Length: 366
Image 1: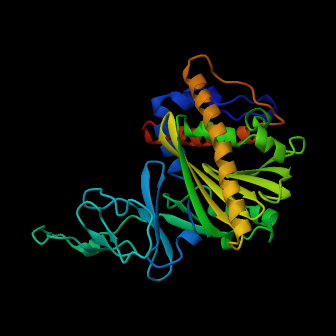
Image 2 (image 1 turned 90 degrees about the horizontal axis):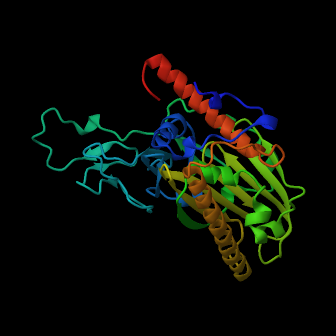
Image 3 (image 1 turned 30 degrees about the horizontal axis):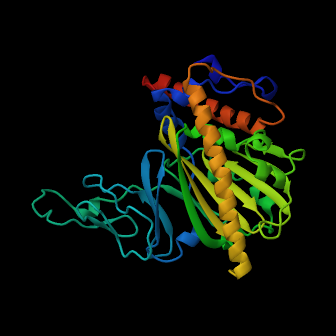
């Protein structure tokens, strides 16, 4: 057990050492310790309104498809055919009657059961009734669809979102939002660099001048819970963008963000693509009725969001270069402004310790 994985008090805390962001083995450690065990956002119910509507995504290295079945239930499966690992779908879609592998045409019902396999009559002992797509656990909360690859997901989903409903109340009916907009950015940094950056407002005055004018840096607060954290600030904006109110930035372990502004929900998913590369997927949903003024506000929101993301991409890629340089080991965290980063790192340390202890017990490397 490395000393840098021991728990650290906020007032004396350092960051995780650079090797957890740059070593080739760190990505496999994250897949085993973090992504394979937790809950991951896969869709909003507005994307899965009809039977056969489906969304494709990834959880760590695992391709996933979420689909609404003939019985109206939303399920999530491995998007991997049991024949020779082809994809059941390569993009989101509507109204599918079945899930048909794009490689050799094996066809599954919307509940994951294999229904047909062409030209398999000569395969001894082959029975389509024996073959199903592996299913994930699914939880639906405020219109958001989450899935976990682990039958005993940790934490339980209720623990992940505990306390958020009370904070949102009835002011943010997220389940009713729609008018979906999707954007994605490929970034040359470890996925944890992007999460670190998200979890603190310390950089906002230096990196995001326009965003800084909307938020009250002096009032900006971070409130960590057991499995999520909230960054909160009063919001002052023109009526043509957000108006006044509050900005709520929720992070849910390990890689989901919910950016909640008046009349708007934006979800972020950080997907690792390599030790020094990730994809950040943004899906935005709106409460407004679709008037011309609302359309203008949506366009302004999308443009402003892109501006902020370009600023974040630049600094995250610079940070990755610094981590890779060999110059940096671990630095002190600001207790006032970086408690969210500390909270994230403590959860990572906990997950890594559990993997190390499990490996020691089983006699295998984590």
